[in-house]
Length: 239
Image 1 (cartoon, one colour):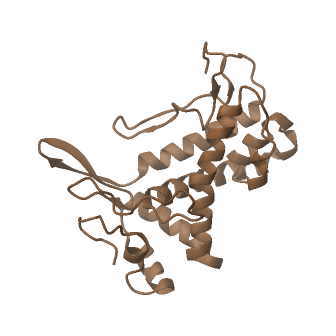
Image 2 (cartoon, helix red, strand yellow):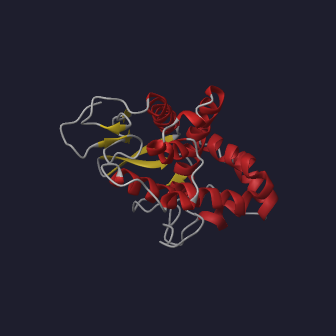
């Protein structure tokens, strides 16, 4: 809620905010300048909190599997992503300039945040908040409700929030935009259906319905062909 550091700016993109998998707990900061006790936009603070809470609740509820390896507890599976005995994940990292993701970690993070943003957007629309957010907070409002456009970062507000805006731009480029493009490429007009199937699989750990949909639209073994890294040596659940 407060910080003695004059440059501290809280919210979803605060560097120390996020879900802690080992502790099964979430760290959330108040949106805005944490050295200033005044709340610039109570509505945006509430929407940012709602997005963060929904986002981390989905992380908390995601399927996970652990195993013992040389006396240590290793997380061998999280959602729809696996690790082999060497610690390598099922899918490889995206290239720096990749327009769309094929990395399961990004897919799961993108699906989680897309759902959280949809929840925030529904609340904002229901309360008619679009015109009530002051210009300095418009960028964060568009981010929180999933309405960012590439041009939004051309004229980011200077000052204390600059680091926050840079983190926002990096997250949107590396997660939000890539997941959106992935849904468009793989789902086409059924992008929303694909998103729902991904989210359900992440929560339940059951790939059956997602694999069936992918196979029906992209041929047998679509999950494996789309995501599996050549370096991965573990079990292959992607039928």
